Image (cartoon, rainbow, N blue to C red):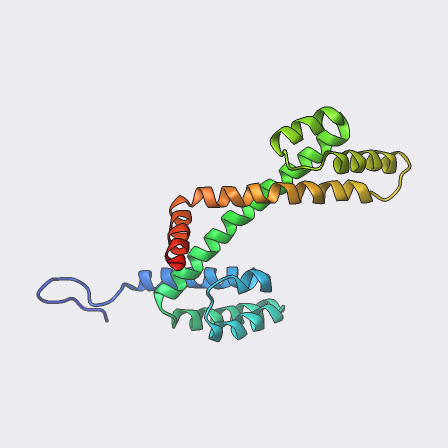
Length: 198
């Protein structure tokens, strides 16, 4: 029973509904962690003692057993400090923003590849205006080879290479957008670098 403080009239403990909602939030967080790849999981500040439980939950595929193991994982997660769980949530949010930027960059590279294939030199000139560091000759050769492959129904090796070249070309700009969005963080990094040189 929760009871009330006689002096202030406040409840001593959280209500049953609050506890249930918090437990469901932790369970949802556990589901997200289980759905991540090992590389994505490694980037998060997940405590070492939770990793075996996450791995076990991934291993179990039977529906009821999986749900039971997920509940067991959530039980262990609730034992962690709230600050630890908040840090995991923040890192997940940051990763999802980065993922969206990467997907947007890939779509942009695909769009440029299609423009290069259809418009040729006109699209290449526009691309070079936007990315002057691009190698005109390499891209022109790849486009020509991709068009020849398409005409002869050959495997699209050059077509794929165009995408890789464009992706490599656009990656620094995408990373620049990430730094620009977190202006305070960029300033803090610069200050730390200045302090370490002193």
